[in-house]
Amino acid sequence: MALTPFALHDLAEDVLGCVCAALDAVAADEEDVLGCPARACVVPGTPAWDSCDSPCGGGTPGQLTVNVARIYPSTSFPTEDREVRGVRGCVPPASTAAELVVTLLRCAPTGDERCPPSCEELATAARQLYVDATTVYNALYCCLPQTGNGRRGPKFLLGAQRTVGPEGACVGIEQRLTVALPGCGRCPGEGVS
Image 1 (cartoon, rainbow, N blue to C red):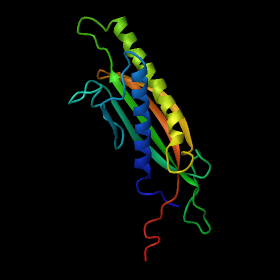
Image 2: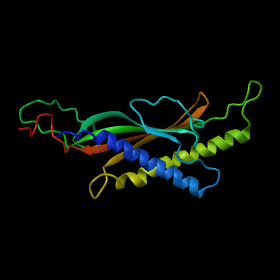
Image 3: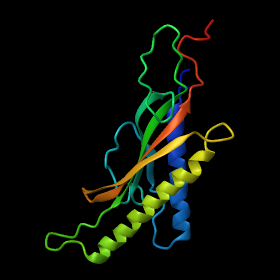
Image 4: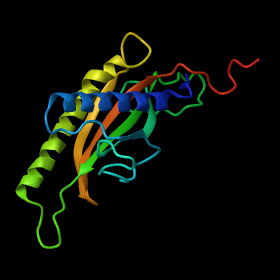
């Protein structure tokens, strides 16, 4: 069966909401920790590193994005189904797997023309980076099972998380996540009288 028209977008919005809520919860409980950035959005394709400092209009600095990296059929999640379709008696895959990427950027200390950033500035940036890394991981692990329309959330596989940057005065994390989307929509033209 096909996906519903908004299946990918709704999933990306759910992931963004989970991560943003977790970042705000940690910031409320811990001193000197930044919460969810004011610039937090679902983006088409690979995110541009537009802002890791205070956004236009103020708010918490940084940039949080969620994007879909790829989708593929999966008969045994998360394995990619490589079966040729269109053959007589062919059974459609049980689900569609969607690989999402959560990217969270914050400012990196830069120093000036004469001096590199101090060890204290680097330690503060590292502390924020490590808090962000564990918070994103925990948010996906704990919140994602509670999303969706059924009693249970979707099946998912947390992929590798890696540090990105520093580049252009930004540093952050990139977390990959693969989610099974059940096919519950109709193919175009099905059910039309």
